[in-house]
Image (cartoon, rainbow, N blue to C red; front, side, top):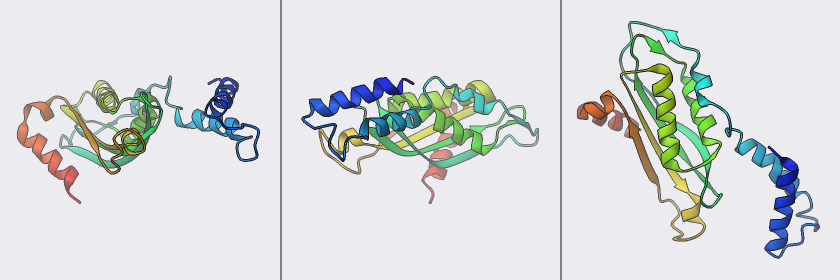
Amino acid sequence: MDKDKIKRAIKDILEAIGEDPTREGLKDTPDRVARMYEEIYSGINKDPKEHLKVIFKDDTHEEMVLLKDIYFYSCCEHHLVPFFGNVHIAYIPKDGKLTGLSKLARVVETVSKRLQLQERLTKTILDTIEEELTPYGVFVMVEAEHMCMTMRGVKKPGAKTVTISSSGVFEEDKSLRNEVLSLINMK
């Protein structure tokens, strides 16, 4: 990440909106933004599959694994403002291939720290799990509030966007799909 280039760009933006980048409250802003970008976009050029390289073998478990309410934040590629919410991941292990629950959360963390669309975030999480664990099926649901709808445009705070990607048995078996949705919605 080219932090010096980011600092110059932020200084230019501050000037372009009519601010004085040398005033007390703004003089360190370009540096703060550059450091923040390095953190919040740290998933760029990282492969989320790396988190799923550690696999545990347990031939006795081929039932659904559900990890819900994984909090995340990301940035919309259209307006460069945040969207945030929860990711719910379910998979049904095949051939005893399990992964640590924290590994699923790390996949979400890596994928979310990029400029993107919620739809792509959802599908990328699913594809990563599918490719590395080769389960009977994967179900990913993302619920998020988009600041581009809250602070500008239509100005509707609290509106949530829900996206779902599913594969395998979660696509084929409606009762299983309904079960996972019921478990996600259970408080």
